[in-house]
Amino acid sequence: MSIEIANESGVEVDTDAVLAVARHALDEMGVNPLAELSVLLVDIDYMTELNHRWMGGEGPTDVLAFPMDEGSVDHGPGENASAGGEPALLGDIVLCPEVAAKQAAAAGHSAGDELHLLTVHGVLHLLGYDHAEPEEEREMFGLQARLLSSWRSTRSR
Image (cartoon, rainbow, N blue to C red):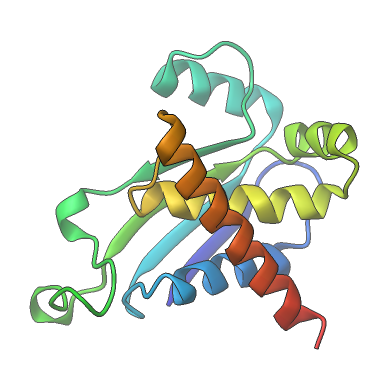
């Protein structure tokens, strides 16, 4: 699995852990091992601009997910491998560590834990999950919690 990460946020982040949790989520979801993902960490100003431009939101947000064309995503072993063995381009996850740190303080856990949660959240959005409706939210957030829990248990061994 190819996961590119770029930290342009100006904040020190454990990018190895962000990569590891993204890889774990993709593996657990049965995503094609040839899949490609990009993770970008940005500052508040750039996240505010992205949120406004793409989501019509005001101010910065914590995570944005930009999926590639859904037809190119291989969701796992139940589907045929993409044509000619070409890698599936999942898309981009954009994280804002400064927003994550504020949310982490309010939630009573570390900024790192919040970034891990947001990374899994972004991966699930790229795989087509959403939380607009209560049923969708229960499914997505339940899956998010299970993925984080299983990742944490593998790290503590």
